[in-house]
Length: 235
Image (cartoon, rainbow, N blue to C red; front, side):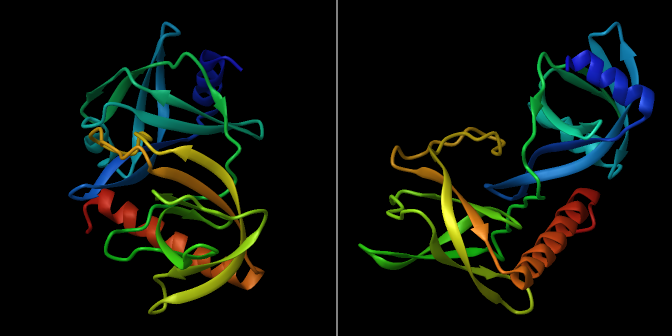
């Protein structure tokens, strides 16, 4: 689907668009903020006016960003795109229609933990014993981390997760490395950060028990609400 066709469909059907952008929760700690908007007008098949922002202060955060991401669903398919050229006019934004769309395969909501209440990951490694990592992000069936140590694991393994709910909850889950890449600027930082060459970004797929999924889901819902309150100015 061409971007203009997608945006025309969203406009005609009055469908929402989920926006995500870098949000500095604390000095030096940047997470992903999210909100919703609608297309109010299409200009000559090249630009769109975005409005009806929720939370209402969303546009004030976006004006300080160099770019943000748009995600939407059309006829059962989910797409996302990068919005770079845009101008904020009060409570609306006029943005260039992107040149391409990318299908989204992500099925679960993902959040970044706070500095004050991190999610910890524990992995038993043959050369070091039990090693702990701070999670960069977490979903119901996945967790990300950055480390300068090579994860010497094969196939599936057992990892521990310490989640900051109910005065601390510890769960065990089978896991597998499904993503590995040299860490760098992932677009989540407001300012370009200099990374060490040895830093590696890992993505782990989790296979938690159904009861443990409920605990992870509860944390994600609470954390997502916390971030929304931050955007609304309630925190």
